[in-house]
Image (cartoon, rainbow, N blue to C red; front, top):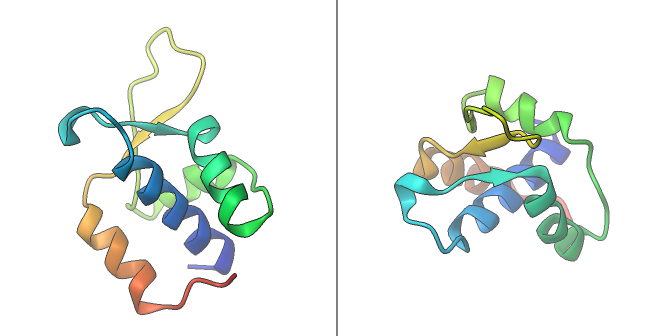
Length: 91
């Protein structure tokens, strides 16, 4: 996992944790994760990083249906947290 992916995964977990929805109904999307990322790292990222994290198994793409945004869930939060704890998140 590269430094950007680690930082984005951290922001995804933070956004997911701060959701008002129940754990089984929680979703995240680029528009919701970006402000958390920008506040912590004073930077931005391309939304393709979310798809990369999904391919790695840390995120799971939700059903878009009629929605314009691409939504994701975090199927195993503990696994995602362990991945970023094992390696220091670059500032």
